[in-house]
Image (cartoon, rainbow, N blue to C red; front, side, top):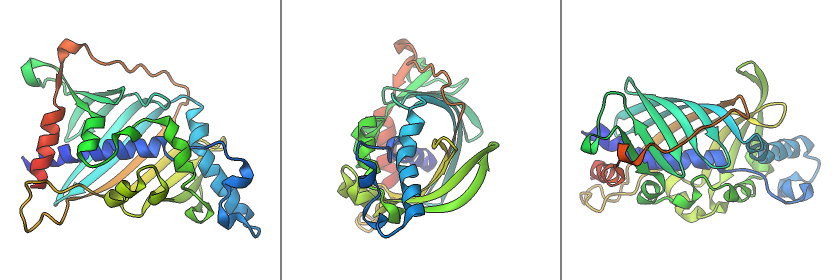
Length: 289
């Protein structure tokens, strides 16, 4: 079915972009005087302060090591829309997570361990009667033309911070998130300044738009990403549409709470797992043709 194919196409993109939002835009080791950016001169004190807070927010959040997280994501392509909701816990440093995901009216048990996604649908068997399926997120991401090395790599965070300057940060106002006072900022990241920015620019355009809400400790409480991602055209695509890669519109909202919570992300027993990475990528290619 085409909807299954669209899900397969979307999974690599969604996995990479979720990771970019999680690990991107973190702090670096530059002195504060160098962090402000070129437009900080001339008395733009409030603007500079907002930029500094946003650039340091990811470091301050990851210092908590873990948190509870909820994710609401909507993916749309070729007239189809997939909405998913997730609730669980995340290890910021390792990139591992445990989550219950609700999609198409089904509740799915999900784990991410060392860049491998494991999913279990109650009452459903996969290849060989196994109860869990696994998808190599790094391999799936690379099949979509994105650099899988960006997945869960905290070492990349400094590079994302350097891609944010004063002109990229706008303070929107004050909001309450789950009863917590927060400051809302709109952020626009220059994609060309990111690692492998030329390649990523072809997928998402010149800028990466985000909204972030920071609490009184400078940590993330909410972040929202609205964007259009171009999936690469299949080699088997018809001549009349081969020059028009599929576009996936994505909206993702992530909320963080209970910092320091325990995260127990373990891979299921090998005998219970079927690797469906190749099948998922094949379905994605068929959807683009």
